[in-house]
Image 1 (tube, rainbow, N blue to C red):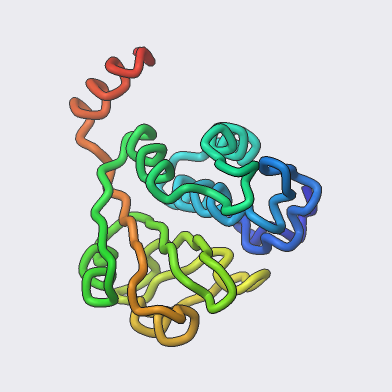
Image 2: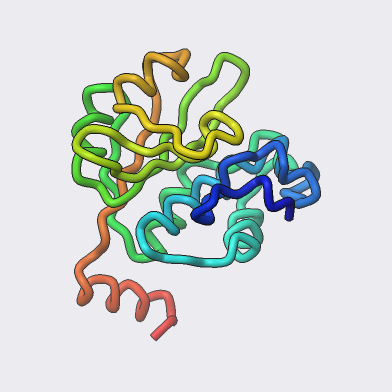
Length: 180
């Protein structure tokens, strides 16, 4: 993949540079924001999984050949399967609450042209670092309120904040899935 798609610290920040990667019947520059957000959120949470693996695993869930991109409910299930409890919100007030103290998360929102996924991680205090929300921006820093004001075009959105499961619960979840 094009090196310019990545930030200097290894996050995918420019979806427009992923055109050579298929995602269903389309290329990732069109509908890949879901798998890109999953990759970035998992990386921010300390789970470095090759982007190719995440893309292939999430591709299995695509409907209509990927015309509508990643299903946000499947993405929730997928991130939970990777050993995380998800706190969820649908409004700005809820997003501010669930993102506070979260190791990482994903925002699903209406851009005015379509639905988009962007990952975030804690930076300092209320300031978050967003990935792939503004294509190619290396360090997109904003509070959740600033993010909503600048990029969200419909007040209802979906925010998932990742919290690692306690070791015993994560081990039990892996056993149920037949992974040890």
